[in-house]
Image 1 (tube, helix red, strand yellow):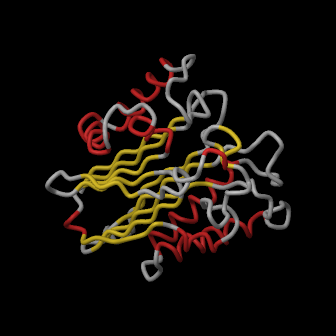
Image 2 (cartoon, rainbow, N blue to C red):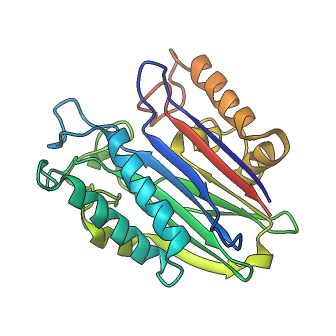
Amino acid sequence: MRTEVVSEPGTPDRPNEDFAGVGVPASGQGGCLIVLDGVTPPEDGTGCLHSVPWFTARLGGALTELTVSAADLTLREILARAIRRTADTHGDTCDLSHPRTPQATVVLARWSAETLEYLVLSDSALLLRSPDGAVTAVLDDRLDRLPRSSLASDAIADATVRNKEGGFFTAAADPSVAARAVTGSLPRDRVGALAALTDGATRWTEKFREGDWAALFEVVAARGARALVDRVRELEAADRQERAFLRRSKTHDDATVVYVEF
């Protein structure tokens, strides 16, 4: 099995708010991947004493442990437990009811010799490539379906649609959002490789239109995750002034790619 992880902050003067991990049980059977994209907080605060990287590290750690060790739980149950565990670590000191309490998008995948399961919540992406080369994108597109009038500014959703009916959902402090995640499973032999990406990396396809999901996957598989992130950075820099590509709130965004090839 080949694995590759690249995670790079948008700018060197800000911490990376993403989390990425690959887990393999001690038995050596099966494995998992986890990708989180922490939501950059507004300037007026989150009601929390802790940073977004603090939150994604703890949520990501809980997800890694549970996804590897709790084979009897579904991925939705694992996400719910990880959210609850993380909330319990700072519920006494922070206002977890604040609409911008630290939160993140989620991609989970877990595989055994027989089955591959997946979960996607919010706008990170999971790409699955079959042995014959066909690429399927697993997406939670609720944010993209919102009217522009619902958004406070480019690509930053207002509190009226965040974790609300008719809006979109992220992993914050409420375990019930796990039920909103896009989930599914496939026979393991129908998946030859997979890639999980935060939206800082999917800009290659979604913002800059360099190619479709299959073309993006080919860049990662043939040239490596670093090549994809480097090309995104080139495109961002070239469009720094013109902003020809719409709905891009930041010149550079944290970019994470996890690639697994069986």
